[in-house]
Length: 257
Image (cartoon, rainbow, N blue to C red):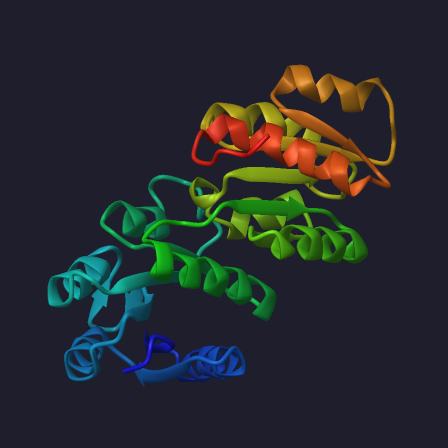
């Protein structure tokens, strides 16, 4: 089978077909199984490199699904899926799946944008055996999200986009993120109040505060846990300098002088 072949193990028939359709649009071929037993047989028959695995199946639930699939094929890359709003809680199904070997987590429902980010990370992982440098951009402005995506994607970063802090906390695996680039003025959960909590819970994640309002509140984020600030409208070089500063926290990537 080609590298872009995968199996989808998902009991929701409409959901499975929608995922297959989105994958097809991205150049991926997929076959579907609607329960774990059939999925394991499909894996044995087709030897895929990747499996999109739902954690709530009629014949098996939770992280045991990952364990059983990995027992069938230890080298298969598992993208664990679950309808949950607790992706970053250690007692959630998704986080348990990660603990037992799932390489990627995907909270449902998800859109094409979120799937694209997963596929970018997946393709890098398949080539390099590790997760790519990953930046999460949080901004309620679609134009800002688009600009950041183009800039960061062109230089090789995996980029995930979220339109609010609520969306990011509910849908993105922050343990797989190296840098969070967040606007400070958005509806919902207040980012400036969230920074200290993110710093405490995810100490190795770089945090960049971004705002068009240049005031004491923005600069105070540096004492509340942010590694750098970016003033909008931003200069590309200033943005990249802030990204490098934030990446230094993780220690995963080195930059040439």
